[in-house]
Amino acid sequence: MAAITSLECSRCHHAVAPDTAQMRCPLCSGRLFVRYDLDPLQRTTQHDDIAASPRIPDQSAVGVWRYASLLPTSIHGTAITPVSLGEGNTPMRRSRRYPGLHLKQEDTNPAGTVHARGLSVAVSLAKHNGTQHLAHAAAEDIAVALAAYAAAAGLAAHLVLPQNVPFAHYLEANVYSADITLVDGSAVDCTRILSQRLQSQQQANAPSDQLWIDLAADDNPFYLEGLKTLGYELVEQLGWTYPAAILYPSSNDPETMLLALAKSFDELEALGWVSGTRPQLYAVATAEEPVSAATTSPLHAHNQSASQTMAVTAAEALASTLDWGRNEGIVLSPMAAAAAAAYATLLANGQLLPADTVVLVNPAAALKYTDITAEAMHLHRPGRPAVKLPTSLPVGGIITPV
Image 1: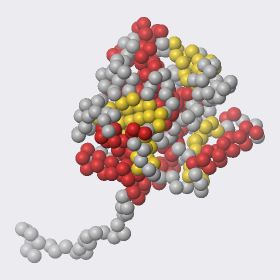
Image 2: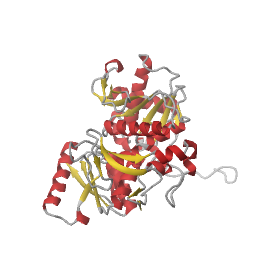
Image 3: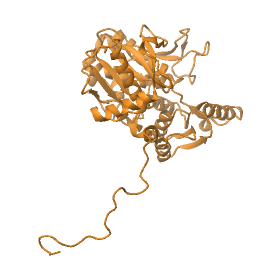
Image 4: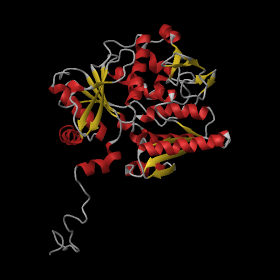
């Protein structure tokens, strides 16, 4: 297995000890990346040997921990016991209509979200370090998945969510027995309230086993490690070859997804496990006004990973939802539907060709957003049955006459 050498700052390259509790560089507040000694893998392991490589006891040879040789499985020689719900190993389905388009179905992950990948690793490290209370604010998919993994780890989860959180998220978090605070305000308000709570705990010198730890996806280097397995997996499913492009929704911090994919590409290339040119990355959002692919804005690129942001209207996203349901037999999440609409735009303006191998990431289960989709469709549950059933039935037929 590759050994962790340090946590390296993405800005100033300052090295931090791998067992630090810090989430950001102490010198410049840059994001920290987990760095490994890849030489042993370069000398001894081929990508086809992953299934046979050493792995953690009692863990399946599939999913996120299939790549245990490139994940933080020990620190200073002390093994880390994974907290796993079977995340990863998600299917990639080819479109019925577009020859080059593949749908990466991250909605099949535990808690119905791609964030299960990152949280499996992040919660594993948090438990290893003795954390008892996990917290998160605002980002509902991440928050609900955090509650699931906290429950699996035997830890407490504290969520601060907007009052208008999708009901499916609220229901699921309650089933996981999370401590939930609903805020009559925005996601920014939720984050502020949680930050105040964390600060007050520190000022009161609360015991370490009572402190809440915010496993925010945009700060946690170990969350990034779990999320990067999406890059490994889709490349492996394509025969260890890069696709021409990857489209993913820009909700819930698009830069984190970009960095996770770029990090997976860095490591795959360092090991010599991938062929082809790095894919074009498109981060897609739903906006009030459309932004054509020709006028998309650049997203911060990492190690030559070309990337752009795109926006489509809510109406275009809804049309895409209905189109995929009718023609592909798949209900996309609202976020993935926006990305599918962007794909159609990229085809129309020639930036992508139908034969180009393209991966569209569906990050979450559509049924978690039924209230949002139903509202967009102006669809409401009927107040009464459309057809009244008879109160009594006549007895008759072959045996008994009417």
